[in-house]
Image 1 (cartoon, rainbow, N blue to C red):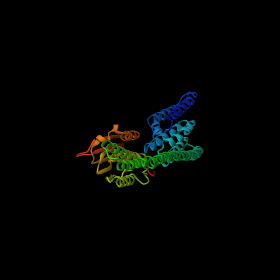
Image 2 (image 1 turned 45 degrees about the horizontal axis):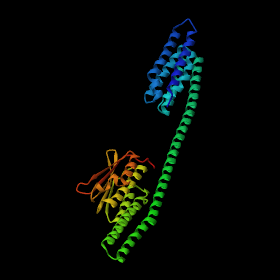
Image 3 (image 1 turned 180 degrees about the horizontal axis):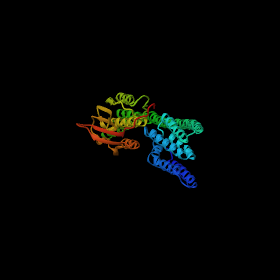
Image 4 (image 1 turned 180 degrees about the vertical axis):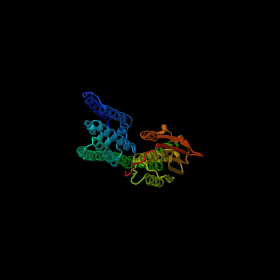
Length: 383
């Protein structure tokens, strides 16, 4: 972004210097008044157009501005040759105001022509040679300096772009490391639960069954052992659901593949038929992970609470948002409310981190409908 205040100061400073040089050389004649008009025209042109182009160059206004500036400089030099120092302002100004390299070069040529015509107006052959030499030298110097500065600026912009890409890659790598750490910890926790608590509960169920066969059958003893077995089975079911909820499901290719694999595994483990429908959406990785984890938790709730025979997982775009819907044909939402455990509340917290929301609704005929909605956030090209 060009600092316009510096250009304001430069234009005003040039005008003040030129006016001062005219003021200290009375008496005034026609050439003096013509020079004053040129200085005033320079200020008006800058105020009306030049300042705007310095802020935001545009075509063809940049060429119009360059042509007008060349005319003003040429007329000023034709009245007072010392006004040739206006080149020091004109050349940099047309470089900054130009919308592109081609128009910048054309604008420089226009200013050089104006300088040449201004000197030529003084008439004799020597002045024409001087005018041509000054115009050519000033044009060459302006082009060389302007092209050099432009290359430096392009190099700086390229470095800034590469730095931004590097920082984005570092952020992505850090995110991947965090996700890998979380996934590894979830996998370790699931493995520990499976290898210790679940195995112990399985043994407790078997011991309860053995005790029921070996003791003298009485109402009280039979009821107690049956209660022990029922409690152990429920705890075993909860631990298996916890293992399933924490088992790693990686987003290696895309969200659709991950959800299909999750549904197939859930169907093998529970016998609950899962239908998966996923629209092809260019979602960024964070949203994919959030939707995947919410689906995983929702299916875990289906396993624990719904007593369903089938479930449907659907991901679709809805007016700038992405909606995940998990529907089952079980006993309804009463068994899966937020007070029943950490599942639903955990989903709400996870969704809140990406600006999403969660709703639990009864199905059209029976069962539960879980809707998780997140704002659409597309992945970057090449990500």
